[in-house]
Length: 371
Length: 264
View 1 (cartoon, helix red, strand yellow):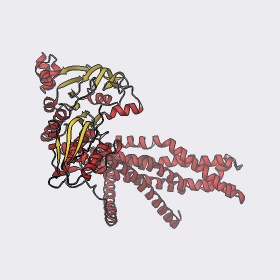
View 2 (cartoon, one colour; view 1 turned 30 degrees about the horizontal axis):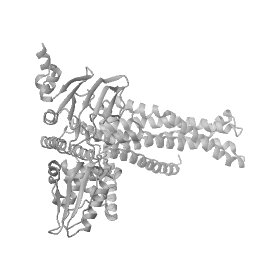
View 3 (cartoon, one colour; view 1 turned 90 degrees about the vertical axis):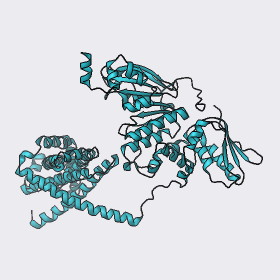
């Protein structure tokens, strides 16, 4: 393989000799040298001799075209000699006028436009969310009125995937929550000789707060994101369009089963988290010399049915909200594979924000009402 | 074709006793064929006959169950690491959906291999990329993002990107599927012109009959049921004088029932 070479010749004009094989890997120095020759001889004619050129690829063609297209004063033109006719045909296929303007990436948007767009998208988001909540409520209402219209197989399939498969992770998180709060409160309570009240703390915290909260957070990450990704992929693949053009309602078809399954499964999972968390607390209390029986007796006096029911209500609401956000984000997915990822991420973030906000709201209301 | 003087004596692509499949499901058994330099070979066959899988083995993405694939005489099946990457860079590949990178404009996609593997200065890289885009009639879309392009545009930009590093063996997976007839015909013309002027070698997976008759020097036909290459030859010859009814059926675009009646 001959190395390609640029040889500017002495004399009246300058000559650039292109030799050998010019490929993407070898073209860079040749291109630079050739442009330098052009620059150094602004007023002299330049001859590009291609007689010993063996092979060019697309970059070589671009090089020859580039030399030919450069604007030069009269009498100082670049002429290309001895170019094989097939290469010449390729080079002549391009019009220098088409390349007069240099390529510019579309400019990034400014701060003002950024803020404007963000505001507009938040407003649009709120509007679609309100509309979506309306559609979901209507669908739920219809489902209650005409239970036959609910696709029960869909509900069961979603419940199995979102519920049964989530059991190990919910058990692990619930158990660790129980262990951690028992231990933390235990260390403090020990100083005041009030270790037995740790049981109250663990019981109330698990039933009223942590069981539902931790389950909801796991559910948002595991299932809410999956809802968004599944429906988002269906949107990208035009499956959602297919549902609509069959005259079917995507909310009834895709959203309702997920809403119902989530409202069913999250409370169940949160009960599991409650039980296993309280058991974790009991294990820790053994190290504070409080046996299982004593723990159990103390627990019965500390927690009430209303605590348990409050946890269930919270879990149901969280489940509905997470499913709704996941489905809405899925249905609102834009074009392309990246959009599906964005929908999933946005679901998790929005869900967690809403879980915490709603949990705060529950706390305010229950303390007002003395529940 | 004086420019395409190649020192390599070996066929551009050589497939030896190849068996491919997934797990226990064999798609193709003991297939052998060569692709000569500057040849346009079309791989055809019905849906599910393993055309795209064969392509993925040729470019070294999948490992075959048995057999070997030689690119310029070197095995891409046994090659590892840098050696494999070097072999793969000899191949320009256009994937079925274009496979453009979503975060870059069309032009940046085409420029990407030049950015990664060459020292060419930016304005010159931009020029090269734009010329490549013109070649596939995509000049107007250089500043658009892939999400803004249609399926056919993505494919054409994919071809431009495949050619950027001067790979002289181009592998195209269903280049004209989903294109309008004019764009498809233009694409065929581009392929023929690249071969005529630059001596490129093409391996094209397709079942667009018009395109096959226009561009293919030779076609190999895969069959799902017999898991083998059931025909090799010039497409027109296969259509007119193949002894195999499945081959004639394919080229004459006959539905299954007609074939059965004809056989009775």
